[in-house]
Length: 330
Image (cartoon, rainbow, N blue to C red; front, side, top):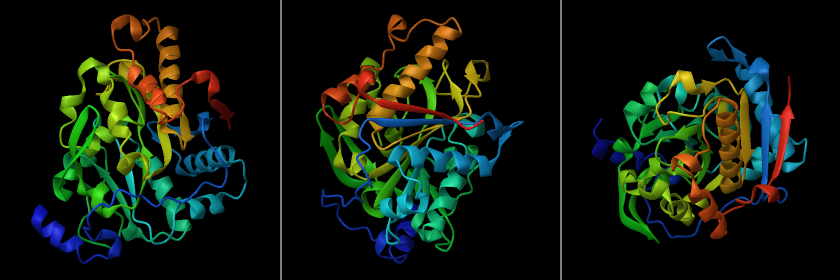
């Protein structure tokens, strides 16, 4: 289906998919409690079964992580508080590295199960990334035709908004999936090293939302990553971040390099993407040291854009002020 036909079809899917002008004001559900600067790392060595993962255990990891993030055992209430049945929820995955180095399909399916149990209809859930071919390479099945099923498509199908979104050092066209279709986002990045930007986690995952990410890798991504994340359209719509650390990578990214990957068997959950990135950066640095690799700063890849985001009050970048909770389930 050509993009023109796709746009015409989505006009009729429902109010959530009407291509209306972006007003600049995002309506977000308020969290149950203040989760600022809290990052929950939940691990379970039983989750990995050979080359695959146990979805039931992944779901338990999500439940446990959210319970600690929001300090409540009412898990269903968390999902219903974060998202309404009228929300159109975009699951922003990272699919640049094939099935092993991208957001794992099992994590996405577990999140979808939670949303469906909270009353969100299948047609109001969209798996998206920059390109259709990237989604397919990571194992996702494309769908932009059947509104009764989970939708899945890239920006090459949805296209980009005609408006140029400008903030500080960045000026980009942003995918219509984010500007005109989705009312809320769950960010599902991967914990991995990046050969130019140091690390690629929560904030940088939104390079997959713009038409010109190649313009923003100079100076180790600083301040471009922070300036893009500062857009209310991006940060304001992101209601939850779950970082995929089932497999993690400490060198050679963003392509998947098995010799520098390790089975971390973990998820990182937060509402503060900056805090999550600071924790993820620390994890990668510790793994590099353990494996005999130099610190990122020593090789000119310090991800200072995370510190810049903290200075811009986009989140907490001071590791000493982050409530980093580590939960080991087995």
